[in-house]
Image (cartoon, rainbow, N blue to C red; front, top):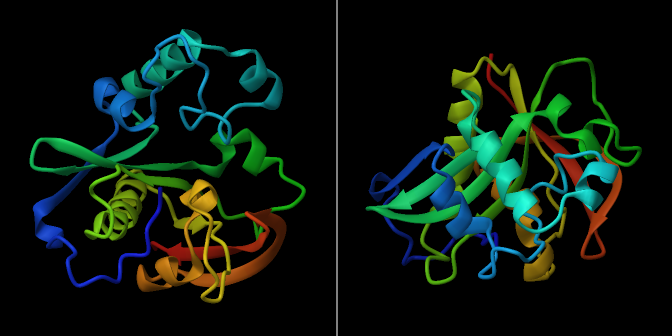
Length: 204
């Protein structure tokens, strides 16, 4: 789950490395179920059309992620402390994320071909150690390397209100502001009952 990394015991960012998510086994550590036949999100729910997402079950969902990891264009980034994978962030062109690209609740601000940072997860036992900040920066760096003109996030504007950890994967406004993002639009989307906003960081 996402954490708001403002604690004094955060790891030094130089100790955290962020890499394109091509290692399927590490993706499975971050996103997969203990039972391989179980149907879990695998961070596909915000990527696939709803019909495909509903019909893709069990191990087929893992196979879809394996396919995404094998592409030249990674499905996101993974954070590591030493050899241990400790975090995941989904970053991709918005046009690849069917539910966001076609959302009636999250607006297109303009015609810029933005990339979307839509999901972040930190492993239990590694939270409040600066992982989320490193994930955001690593995701932005990856998007820049791939030619993205800007990165958007869709965090909750919680104004200090507690965010339910089960819905915290979208991040918070303060978290994105610390990473150099600015508000660009409101949305009609909510997460855990809290309004979400569009935040953007220009890369060119």
